[in-house]
Image 1 (cartoon, rainbow, N blue to C red):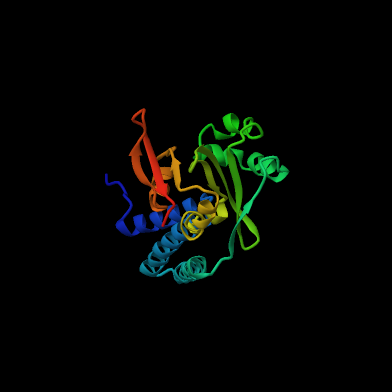
Image 2 (cartoon, helix red, strand yellow; image 1 turned 90 degrees about the horizontal axis):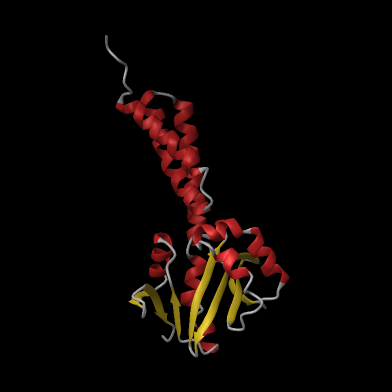
Length: 221
């Protein structure tokens, strides 16, 4: 008795379908577009191979849409601005409460351990990253030395996780920190993704006194 195993062509269809399904679970719009583009392209090829033209052309159309929006994401000039806020600001409370699960995912334990200290710590610097009049993220740092700021949290909302905000804060707008007398930024990576993000932002690895990995960025250019 012979068993029916999926052929290579069928596996192509399965892979395309899975990628499309996975893309819909992405919180980041950029990741959603890229994964959906890959899945739709594979599924479109599958449709052409098996002669299912409605499947082929529908997914080809979806692929074109994804390419169009990815082009807009990477080539549209966004207006970005840093908006300094007081730590007593009610919107800051609301933002941290609203995104607390997502924040704890990227910065484990931050919400519970840090939020209670927010009003008491006099060395905190808080600002919102504004992008096209929308709040794209939040930055909170603690001044640990006269000219050094330790990054406690640099969080972007799902719609704006394409590195543009980070490049603006750490690159294009480095004068903001210099004007505050901050010549050096430091951060302790919370996980692999956070480590890779900091490296992309120009942070360099160093060891602290306890031999822990710390990433630093000199702001004098």
